[in-house]
Amino acid sequence: MENDNKQDPANEGSASRSSALDDFLLEEQVIGFLGVSKGTLDRLRTQKGFPFVSVTGVARLYFIPDIVTWLLSKRRWPQEMANVPEDNAGMVDV
Image (cartoon, rainbow, N blue to C red; front, side, top):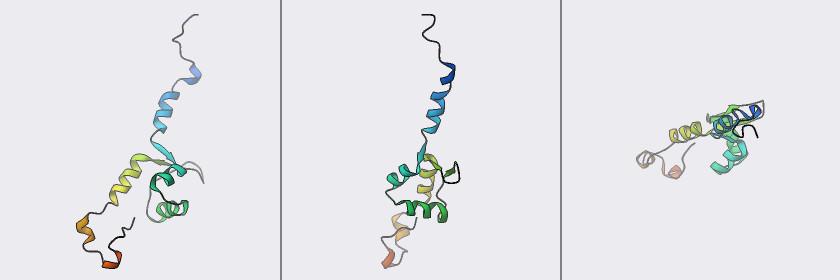
């Protein structure tokens, strides 16, 4: 055996590529994470500005830090709910 520690050039950088993709979710994962339907996710994306990365015309990835930032921007505090009409008191528009 010459050098067991030699790395295969074909795999060089594959660990860094895979770790860079660890911060992305597929659409199905986002649906499960948020507990919403595909239609709701589509509406969030097209009407409410939910962040995504377009890979192709139909394939999308979702960057986890962008999702967290978007969700935090939609956060409502109890004092804000005091100004909501009684019939909408339990509803938060996301």
